[in-house]
Each structure stands twice: as C-alpha cells, then as structure tokens.
Image (cartoon, rainbow, N blue to C red):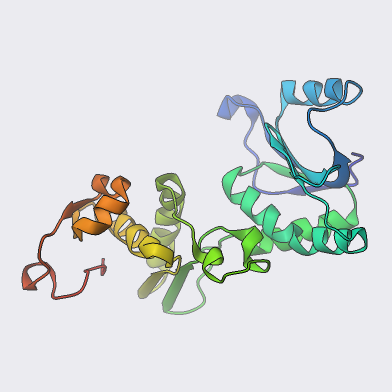
Length: 246
C-alpha cells in the first residue's frame, strides 16, 4: 500500500507523553488474504513495532476477513459493482473506526480513499452548538446495515456498550454547557435497546440509580449496574411511564 496522503484524525500526543504507540489507520483498495503471505508479513510486523496499526482494505476472497490489525471488505459480485460499493460504504466504515480505534492519523492510499476518509470524518460526532437548543440522537452503529439491510430493524439492532456511552456522556455534558436546553434521543429501538441505553445514560449524567421494569433487567442483565427492579410504576417514580428525564 503506497500512501499518497496523510490525514490527521486528531491532535496527536507525543508518544512519550502517552506512553503508548501512535495509532495509525491505513485505508486503501489493495486486496489482501489472511494470513498474510511471507512477502508482506515482515513489512507489517516492522510497522507494528512502532505503531498501533489498523488496516481497512479489500479482501481477496468472497468472505471478508477481520484479523488483528486487518479489517478486509469482502468483494461484491458482480465485480463490476465491487469498486462502487467499496467507495460508497467507505465513509461509514471509516467513521466507525474513527470512533472505536481513535487514530492519531489516517493514511489513505490514493485521493479516492482520501475522499472517503474526509467524508467519514464529517460523520463523526461533533460538539458544535448553533442554537440555544441542542439535539443529540443515537441510532446505533450498524453502519454496514444502514443502506444494505433486508429488514429496517437491522439498522437499529444495536446496544451501546458502557465504554461507548462514556464517550457520549462527555460529549453531551460539553454540549449542554453551550446550550440552554439539551435533548438526547436513543433511536436504537429494536427490542427495547433504546430504553436500556437511555437509562444507562441518565445514570451516567446524574450519578443516581434509576428504577426499571424487571423484565427489561432480566433481558439485559448489564442494566443491573445502573437500575433497580421496579415492580410497579406509579407516582413515586414519576407516573405510569419510564422516567428518562435527567
């Protein structure tokens, strides 16, 4: 993969200050097979000695591969549509890796991948506030299913992990400091996942445990870290509806 552009993803910290290797994401159209062949492995082993490396590229065979530092996109049949599909979905894949991997820099193989990287960065969350009212909406992170799903529920069938919500908690707090009123909507509604994440966020923002339907806690045991079973919903907990107002 010959890089033609270096796109900073964030303000990099000095390696000595962080005590860890710089995080670098390589994005390209090159096709790889895993495990890597003997001619390529020394190259990437050398890179990984000094970098925390991730590679987003194409897979040589139909079944895409994810192994260690590599995330390879399966080729599409017919091949005529393969390139179009790769670049159309590239911004969403980049956006996901920017959130999960948080690279210090993104290296694109060509101007085509660079365009996808820039679009992906524009999809990343922002704390920019342009009004007295702020609105935050969480749809989940099923990027690959957003435009290519047989069932619309596939788009929203995502439960945010606690670590992912921690990042949103900080963004929401920063946004709320700039706006007079802030609304946070969880739209990952499939099988009540939105309610689970909304309750978790409320606890993270207020520092107070909340009541939740016992059936919800039974289905999502991780909610026990934030909520207690409420056998009856009445005026003592805010009326007949689940209280989510923070």
